[in-house]
Amino acid sequence: MNYRLAILFLLNVFFFSPIANASIALSEYRLYFDGRTKQNALMIRNTSDNNLDYRVLLIHKDMTEEGNFVEVSDAEVIGRSAKPLLRYSPRRGVIKSQEVQAIRMTVRKKADLPVGEYRAVLKIITSKVSEQIEAESVKSKLAYSIPVIVRHGRLEVESSIVNPQLITQNGQPTVMFWQTLEGNRSLYGNFQVMNSDRAVVGEVNNLAVYTPLTRRKVYIPLTQQVEGPLTIEYLENKRYGGKLSLTETINTE
Image 1 (cartoon, rainbow, N blue to C red):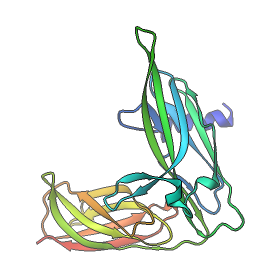
Image 2 (image 1 turned 180 degrees about the horizontal axis):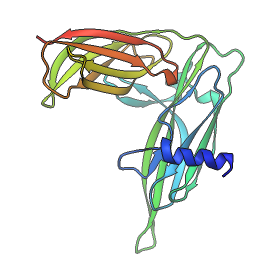
Image 3 (image 1 turned 90 degrees about the vertical axis):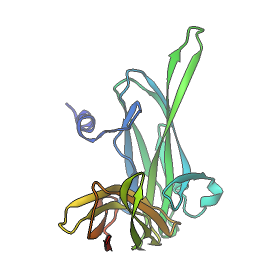
Image 4 (image 1 turned 180 degrees about the vertical axis):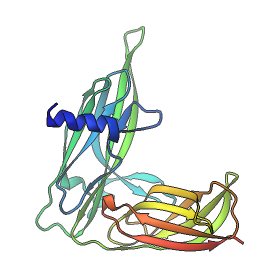
């Protein structure tokens, strides 16, 4: 088995994550480029029994304070878009059933690029063709969004947990608070809520706060009814350049 085949084998076995109600699995759910990283790749595996047409393009989305995403125009992200910095291929094609396609991406920075974080979203559109009796082809399209983050220079960020409360949401005890963001880069990490015995009673993983937001509302459903003090702990994901940690206490009595 040559090196390339070995890598594809390992990706198939260990690293692909399926998407609910989808026909593909992805090797990554975000693409990250720091000052040392110039190239990256997204592996798309067709998990269905049909061949899939695919198309990829770069778009922009901004996050709301509630954590939702809204698509925005190029004009609205001037000065913070990663789109002019990225080259990627292939942009369209067919992935045969149970096979893998690599989307390769390269960063090209200009010498006078200002220090900052630049973002875009890699939108993947897939469709399978079903032949009807009238010999017409009907395509059912699905779209997936992968954040792409490019960081340049020395970036700083500060954050805090503000106004934590214990509420009831959808009949379930839930910790609610604001996570603030102050600085020139985004946040991406995991929250845990622990009771007085240090047992984990709630958690949320892979939660992002993107600039230009200054805060985001966070909800953490709890697995049980609680009494007494709770501790909220946050740890940024080191894989994506983070090292921030936060701790806050909430008294539920």
